[in-house]
Image 1 (tube, helix red, strand yellow):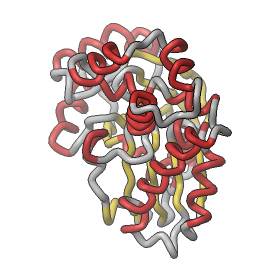
Image 2: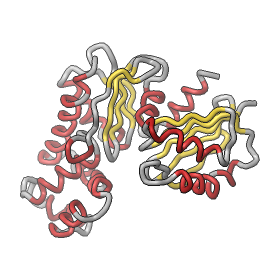
Image 3: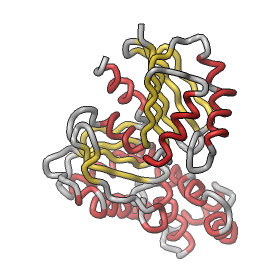
Length: 281
């Protein structure tokens, strides 16, 4: 029986699913793998030490790896690192945006979006990306993302634009001061992760007018600056990611106001990826 290995990797964690005839037979996680931050040797070592021992007795026919930073110039590097532990007949490496398209749209046309720590989107024709608006990162873009939600939250807090008491509640809950926020955003590494880590506060207080304003504003920006440049009148708009999943109600409300039809919203692409390859077997 054919066994295929599917991986979905972010900067901090990689989810691995070994499937046979479209059914999961083993699922586990390892550290994140990214060719942006790691050399081929480092990726190969991570797989050798923490992935291969789990699967060494398996007969893996194909590996499909999806990851952040897996742009076309980096795919060969990741593929060669995987092949050192898993000399499978087929090894394909794709970006996280392709993961979203395969998972959400499969072989059908549609619009695939990621709303997590960062954001991204594309128009998919069933086999390839036909249009993509660059996400640009949380300073210039990444509308709708956890990082941008957090950026607006701390900005409004420090400029006294939140409902009375919420600024103090935010600082207390996360043990922050105005000085420590400035330090984390402008001087410490991975400011987007810090800002995105504040999104649970927004969710907890989503019924407050000042919080709701932040959330609806950044979702509106995401639709206007990204999705509405695609053929959204003829295609459903689908989402993967923790922000889309947990904030699905306000996301749907903003979409409805703009005449945008929402399709699937899922927290992780893995189940959709398994379906994608099940349908190909």
